[in-house]
Amino acid sequence: MHQSVGTLTIQTRRKGLVDITAPVCEWLAAQGIGDGLLTLFCRHTSASLVIQENAAPAVRRDMEAYFDRLAPESAAYEHDDEGPDDMPAHLKAALTGVQLSIPVAGGEPMLGTWQGIYLFEHRIAPHRRSVALHVIGA
Image (tube, rainbow, N blue to C red; front, side):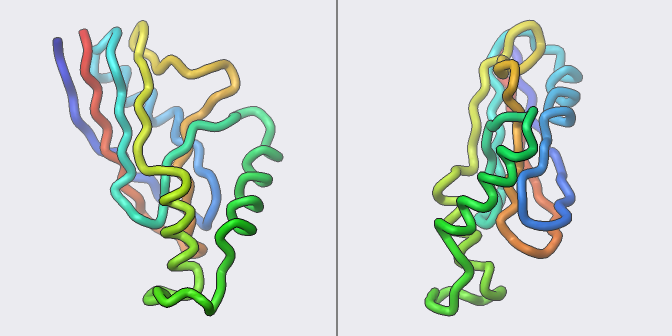
């Protein structure tokens, strides 16, 4: 049994879904673990991780619009230290989650045909995000 730990840095341009499947797969391949479990952990409270369809861009746009309706910018929030998108970003991260666990087989994540791994940026301004990676297996 072997394990590896690493960090992936993602520069976001705006709020929305950022496909991080390729860099995650590249990191995983470099670890030399054929079968096991991959864990990803977003080290922020205003961004999150999701597995979602990677084929139709409309899915990403609809998800972004849905979460904007669910947790809209508003002056009604008490917490607004970093602006009107601050508290909605925290709510969206709480609803979507900051951790993913993905089985690994043959050195690749066992994603479905149309699944991709996304960092979901919930802030309007660009940010530098960090995702911790851990894989354990043989």
